[in-house]
Length: 384
Image (cartoon, rainbow, N blue to C red; front, side, top):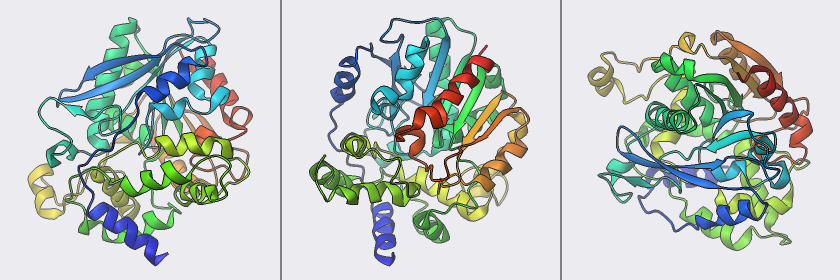
């Protein structure tokens, strides 16, 4: 465990601004081979980031007319993770139900690596957390989708950080609540005092050592390992599954090993060091609040020694929460605290399967009966 912690610390401390090559055409080939149309839309945020948003406008059955849905990925994920679980992928299931499915890619992920002024080799590019993703990326994406589709509202489905950024946006700019028919939170990350992930818990004790680092989390070693080792029918593939479990919780029963090559080819998808540090701060403080720059800088930025907390009473849109007992990053105690502070929770659902972990919300073998069937019913009931 000590060696693992040293590795993670050095990775964060000396994270570089070097972006690895990535085959963006992979997902286009994957989706179109399954007879789904796939579009890529470009959006610019008010602070200059250029984002790509994927869209499946109709199902392989050509069904449409059920409404607009935005899927928002978690930390180190991308839009691809809504689409690589074969016929059980949420994007495909919703498209076949007639939804116009949009999938965002946050700044710093492989599909959204451009800025009008900065290059990814410059530290200034990476000076953001999920706070800025919520305020700028999510708002710009919602506005673009509603304008493009001529819709008044959309349904929002977020995984982990996708929920975090939604709460940032709607608590800071409450007018965005009126643009949401329902927010479905999968493994919602906000309060994190009870996180079981041993790396998060230990690293949270000394986040001050890395809090000022501006850069991309260096994925070079992980990518080399996953590209050359995490291939189907190789015994050492078990190492790759353990890499996933170490972050999310162990669940061998629901992991389809045939998916590992696709998962590891696309994960991690890129993020800033600052996103990780912000989560580490939440683990230690027990609060859901803005980035902690330490007292002197906090005084300059916020006018007080501690960062301000997000006012969740302003998140008035309908909310459905889905969580599990074996998720090491979104523990039931923390989700229930979030539930109690949100004023309009209409669904509070704990996954019945005891071993369900953080990645299972995307990749579980039995994800349709365990989660997506219930989620589809929720959308039908509350998506106006």
